[in-house]
Image 1 (cartoon, rainbow, N blue to C red):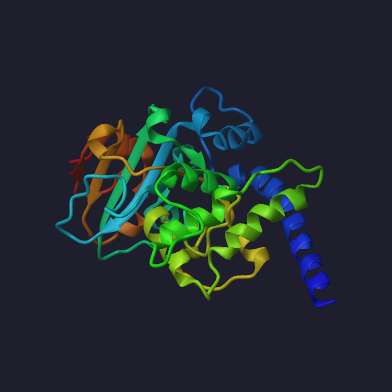
Image 2 (cartoon, rainbow, N blue to C red):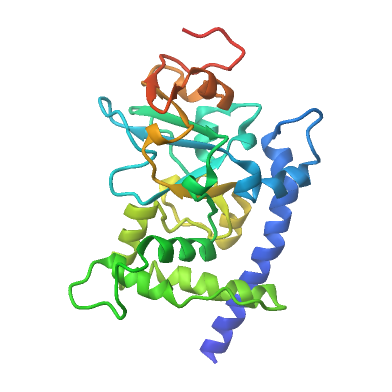
Length: 300
């Protein structure tokens, strides 16, 4: 009886995911004041639809915070295989830095240097940009580690081997029931955070930047950077902006432009304008700018 009730709860939750995802797509634009290339901008439903396909969006924003004195040479840290980016279009007109950071699930670290990338007109075959859903994550892991490991994992093998073996045989199978199709992916994704196997979660965090607040539906959770517990309804309500995984490339090998902004009084309330990053950022490198401004403002 307990297992039947558990399955019922899971299927209710997966049905709720479908309904809330549709609601998110309809409400996202109004709540974040999206602007899109073109005049006039497309219908908000079209904007959200296009943003779900990295090949059509192809304009990514990435924020991170680093201690002073560190100049990044890759999009992510030295252990990362892939890193998260979001859609630049969802932050035009610009929000404050503090607001912008909250939408991809970050915490605005006021004592550290802000590193902000804007990557557009990318070679998508090089980036291998994927909408950050669990099925796409499983595909990425199989592509990234295929041929390196055997299954089942031999004794003393690294956690990458175990995770690879967990996802190796996953197949995204069609089903007339959206809840059933999604349940298979969500259940496997949830197993990655089984507290009895902490090395799995550690591997996902260090190699892919995936933490327990990851939804697996292609939307990041606003305000989840503090790691606090939330209800399913709250996680889904705050899943607002699209997120993608891209290869952790050397910055010099990309079309990305990057700025580094040291701490200063009022930085959190300054505008984080993707156009400013593109105008002032170093091409294929990160350059320091003293303050954040709108792209239309004069800047030093």
